[in-house]
Amino acid sequence: MIEKILNEITLKVWRQKNATAKGAFETYTVKNISTDTSFMEMLDILNYQLVEEGKDPIAFDHDCREGICGTCSLFINGRAHGPDNDITTCQLHMRKFKDGETITIEPWRGTAFPVTKDLIVDRNAFEKILYAGGFVSVNTGGVPDGNAIPIGYDESESAMDAAACIGCGACVATCKNSSAMLFVSAKVSHLARLPQGKVEAVKRAKSMVAKMDELGFGGCSNTGACEIECPKGISIASIAKLNREYLTAKFME
Amino acid sequence: MSKLISSSIGKKLFMSVTGLFLMMFLMVHLTINLLLIFDDTGELFNIGANFMVTNPIIKIVEPLLAVGFLLHMIYASFLTLTNMKARQVNYKRFNQTKSSSWASRNMYVLGALILTFLVLHIMNFYWKIKVDHSVAMVHYNGIEMHDTYSLVAGLFKSCLIYNLLYIAGAVFLGIHLTHGFWSAFQTIGWSSDIWRKRIEVVGKIFAFIIAAGFSIIPLYFIIKF
Ligand code: HEM
Ligand code: SF4
Ligand code: FES
Image 1 (cartoon, each protein chain N blue to C red):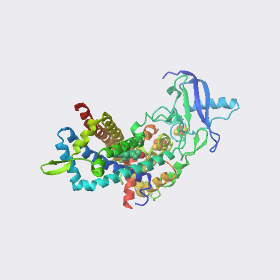
Image 2: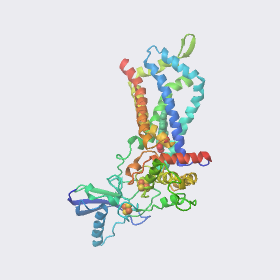
Image 3: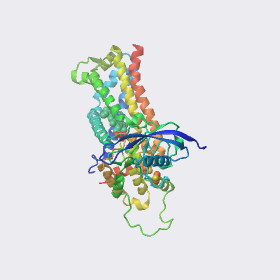
């Protein structure tokens, strides 16, 4: 792809001093941005500009900047992780935007994900759901012989697909109900499909769903928006699996 | 079973089961209704309708149906309320058209429209037969029964507005089911990456049959009379 220069981009950014402040949109312009610039580099450029003008730079989450850690967020032009599919915000490039465009940048919105500053939200609710059961606590001993416990190809592939979840929260951000079902289902179906995880599958499904409900996430309306916006392409078939696991667990009580 | 009802998935289980039950009812209802357009003397439909009211199975299913409707609506309201509370501050710009269908995002609105239609529908027919007793009787082969045909045909011949309202009701129901059918299976966990596409296709066909089937009847009366 040939590099082009975007002469001027207008940005409408949500600014909020702290968790209790009211917050509002501020408008900024950035000039001469290469289409090869990543979205976050463009924000870095804007922040340098703001610092030079003696203003407070925009706070936003990022860490690895290569799509593996799940730290970056941002609701860009009405979509989680912006206009491209199957990527995180840190993998988004300015070639996806047109010269002269106005880009709206908002934080994830959800009662369970409160804004702490500007575009940063507190995603500790996800940690709490994981503490509730997103782990294996049985002792499985040393590394077993590869052929001792056969795992079917489809099972292992599905488990690996679900394990790809990076906990970014785009599913919650994009869901009309701010539901965490895709995240929870990824964890539950990943572990329930493998021998080590199966042992605690019943307990895990029950406690993770209970925690999710308690923390103020909405329910699932099966709209499927989450799987479209999920950077790792987690399918809502894993939500069907979670529903199966949960309902069987409840009926077994 | 503790706390199943209060959990988000438990509530959806009730929506799904009642929804599936309501869809089965719709199929029976449509089959009987279609008798309306196959015999303009009304005998066929009257006998069909009489079979339905005298049938002992239907006597058991009727109160179940009322309970099903109530549960479906109660859980729909609870869920919609929780879902709204889960996002108190909404986005300024929220582009949802690329990732989900309109029907899936507006099930409660569609439900409310269906409910409005249902009230009208009960006032038009059920009330007059069961409560008012204002419907004439007819005899076929010595058996006395309500002349339900004249009641229904009379309404559809009397005023174009009713025909249009009934078509609108059928269409809203159809749209509700373009999402509802597949969603009910997903909720109880009967879906996978392979089965999902199949269930979605069957659901779209089912929704079309319901919308078109119930619309044909008023259309028939508009065109013929
Ligand atoms: C004959 C009439 C009706 C039929 C056949 C029907 C059928 C269904 C089905 C099959 C579902 C999917 C359930 C699931 O996602 O698991 C559904 C969902 C829904 N229905 Fe109905 N429904 C009817 C009437 C109503 C009415 C009157 C309301 C109004 C209150 C309503 C409100 C809803 C809502 C809000 C949902 C989505 C719930 C959610 O996913 O969050 N429905 N319906
Ligand atoms: S399921 Fe997808 S969108 Fe949700 S947290 Fe995991 S990676 Fe992010
Ligand atoms: S910063 Fe790590 S995934 Fe985007």
